[in-house]
Length: 131
Image (cartoon, rainbow, N blue to C red; front, side):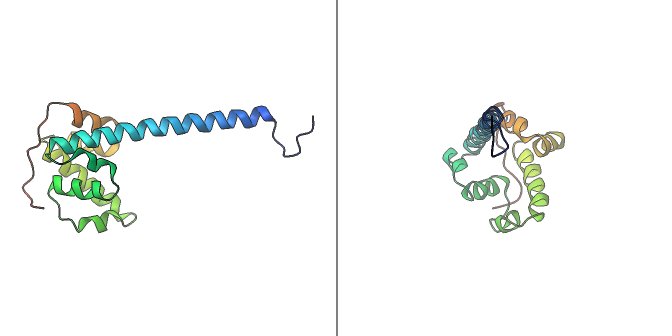
């Protein structure tokens, strides 16, 4: 058997299957996040479909947490976006009357805490800051 490219068909097939598995896992994570954001937006009285539109979903999130729309610029700057993303999740927890511990969960394990926020019985209470 001469494998001129250095890889046997078995290895190539295995790598293809591994890649497909990772892609399916990533799509499941994406679907969970979209469904959770959809429900979080609806709880706040915003259109759920906004979770599907890039950039617009950030604008809606800023509106929900009571931050000014110009923060979108700060959220698009690398490294600075991490700090303002943390603040955004802290404000999101406050907007739904959740504790700082829940906000830490949103920051560190958002794939778990976003669905919790979306599907528990918490209600949107708003924020003290204005949009």
